[in-house]
Image (tube, rainbow, N blue to C red):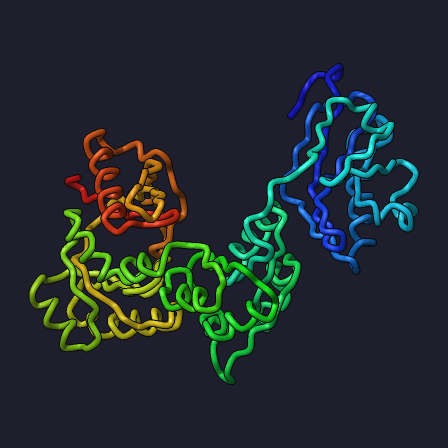
Length: 413
């Protein structure tokens, strides 16, 4: 962002959503004289201004202005564009070095500040948001990201949390947050898997769409169906897609039917006898995987027969706690494979395109640490085959929305 001193001054923009007036405004800090820096763009500090928090919003704007002025050596006064309702009664919180002007999507008032900064472009109208209010049916980092996206699209955000997460960022970052109840002695995760309770909170809070994030209920056809039954949009694939692909054993069958190669494996196994019988057939080593969910949960590599049943029991228990379903299956273990993913997006009518591939082989405990795109180590022929297989599988299933088809590439390619 460094530039010459004779260039235009820096722009520092923060989009605001004013909940009381339902207006989107842009807060911009503009030194009126040139500085050694031309442009400073910060996208993360996005605030939802509620009526009770309006005073804090002005304090935040003033603090940012003061930081900018101090950081750039008092090169001049700054301008801050804030909601109309905040100007009359609270200008004393901003301080003498900051001037205020109004800039909303409904009306843009001309001011000396804008005249002094002709390079500043103000939006006169934003596109209509796809929904009015979205719930992030998840926690922590992914919930925060969902909230940020909803705010950027001028929509309300709703968070859910358990008592153990009461100090979590995802609780406080949303426009509204609701405490989930759980049974005595139950794990905190169980509340995030409680479909009836989550749907009830969504209905009572006026939510018209639910984004499940990843993990938890993100691949649950039962949750997607419950959303549909309640008249709430599930942000994700269709119920039919989830019935096919959320259960890895049915996904294997769909891949086989579509002519996509798969690792030798079983259907869902529920008893010790079934596990022993399948391992007798294909031999060791094998890997036990949760039939539902992902993220490395419910996975165990078995190299010795004495570990088979204990690992089967622990994998099933972990899968039940993480996804609400303890079903597992067994596959032949591929030694030191590369984990290659192909990103696809489909329209639900059988039209699917791929968005190329990434190498996710650097993992810890079966969870990805680094993703590299493109997967530079693949031959052109193999890369083309993986793209073809990904589109082939999802086209046959009439996949809707974005998705990822994951492949294991062994040492023989």
